[in-house]
Image 1 (cartoon, helix red, strand yellow):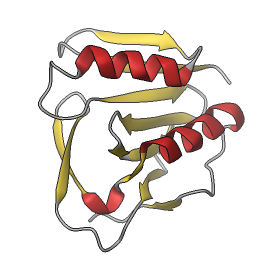
Image 2 (spheres, one colour):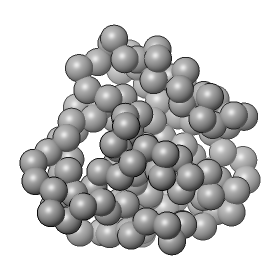
Image 3 (cartoon, one colour):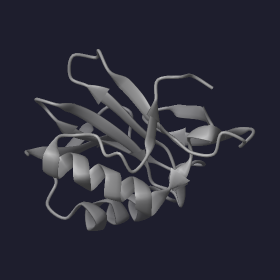
Image 4 (cartoon, one colour):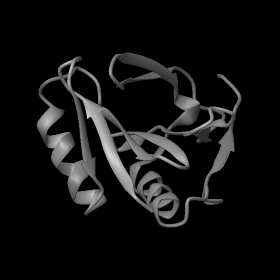
Length: 131
C-alpha cells in the first residue's frame, strides 16, 4: 500500500512524507517536536484509497482510524476503568479520554498491519463510542 505520514508543525504548512521506515520516521518526528509542544505530538498515516490512522507519539497513546469516505470512524480502546483525560497535539490541542490509551508499541504493530494489509487489526478493540 502507498502510505504517507502527514502532519503540521507550524499551523500552516503540511508535511507529507512517504512511509519508508515507519518506526524510525515517527521517532524522528517525536524528537523534533518534543520541545515545541506541551503535549505529545500526533501524526496521520494516510492511504488515499483506504483512509487514515492518527497516532500520538507517546508511551501510552491514542490510535484512531477514519475511512476515506468518513463512514467509519473508530478509536482503539484501552482500559475502560481509566479515568480522566490525556492531551495530545493533532494540529491543535485535544483532550481525549484515558480509556482510549493503549501502549505505543501495540499501536505501532496495529498501524503497521494496516499499512501492509489495508485492514484493521484484531489485536485491539475498536469503538465508535465517545467517552
